[in-house]
Image (cartoon, rainbow, N blue to C red; front, side, top):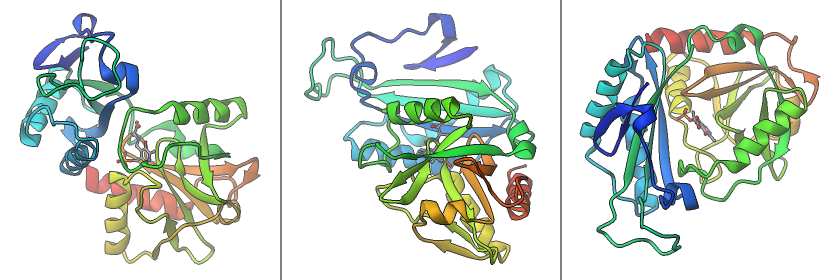
Amino acid sequence: RTVYLNGQFVDEQHAHVSVFDRGFLFADAVYEVSAVLNGRLLDNDAHLARLARSCEALQLTLPCPLAEIEQLQKRLIVENQLQEGAIYLQVSRGNSGDRNFDFPDASVTPTFLMFTQARPLVNHPNVQRGIRMVSLEDIRWQRRDIKTVGLLAPCLAKEYAHQHQADDALLIENDLVTEASSSNAWIIDEHGCLITRPLSTHILHGITRHALIELIRENGLQLEERPFSLDEALNAREIFISSATTFIWPVIALDGKTIGDGKPGKITLQLRDIYVRMAN
Ligand code: PDD
């Protein structure tokens, strides 16, 4: 694979980052994951806008203007002949030559890297199969709206899920669902109304979530942006999660309880079809 690191396109074997990089020592870095379908970036303007917001929240300098980043992303997609999958990009506060909590002075430039990941999006097996989830206390920090690489809590959550015969964890705070470990969470009630938690610092402002809200409105489906409880989720007609790397995955079980009839929900699959048609 060809990867991008600090201005150069190199084979992954030749891309090296310092042990003193603040991304490595302090998780002092932000990231974005954009989906690639038919060799084209999906909703990338929104991903780059969020990158700018994450950087601003952490007083991190963007490595270059967003339009230039997009050109680099496009070149990397071509270099790797990526048709379907994702492009990952990360900006860290750079290498300050030692371990020191204080921000380095302005002469230290950010470390900027990107790589591609080939994976099925449209026909992922989890779409027909559905996934199983378990609930778990959300122990993440209080600025989940910033997309940082401090992802130990989600790693622990996924491991917990796997150890409990599930695919992913639904994160709970004060009896309310925040989101899934790396995606936004949705339920559909008995009236067919789609419910997802409103934007705040408690959740990542998902780009897929935003795109789905527009499609839901355009297609005359019912929508409520409000917090919902674990109990509501357990009794929902359908549950699904959304992200750039899943689009939409139906949830067929939560904490061992079957959701709906134990098959991917009708409205969930219908919305996914609408999304894929738009994305194609
Ligand atoms: N995760 N919530 C969390 C905690 C996430 O990590 C993600 C994305 C989302 C969905 O956001 P979007 O629709 O913009 O992808 C919600 C990415 C895919 C990841 O960490 O790999």
